[in-house]
Image (tube, rainbow, N blue to C red; front, side, top):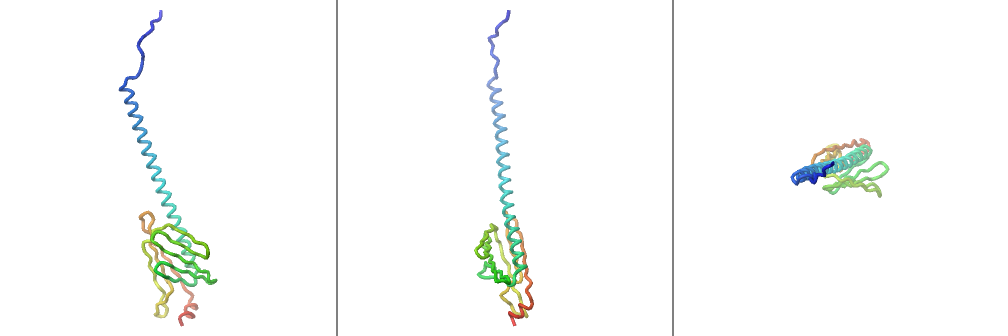
Length: 163
């Protein structure tokens, strides 16, 4: 009737080795691609965080310079901004951080500061201690960025101060 076959059907060792080799190569490529994507994502997040800090500092400095009555520069790394209600704001520029102090509030911004350039106000051919222009060079992930700020002093204030 029916013949029972004594032959077993199975894969050869060579076929199994080829399947294991192909699956390990696929796993290697998928893992490397995943690590590359994670590395790019972390770099993207770091850049965005640094850029956010830059935008906040830029907005704060611009606002403070526009609303300031007096801007002075002390100790080589501190800018003091004084408003009409004698509310003083200090900016401290260090190598890799900018610190903004206003009363008891302190804000830290992680930015690499390359250089600060200060131009002092000259009134009737006399150099004053008041800051006229301020240029700040920072870097975000090795990309240099220049920020510039200016203040226009009230002429009546200047005449009262320096007459």
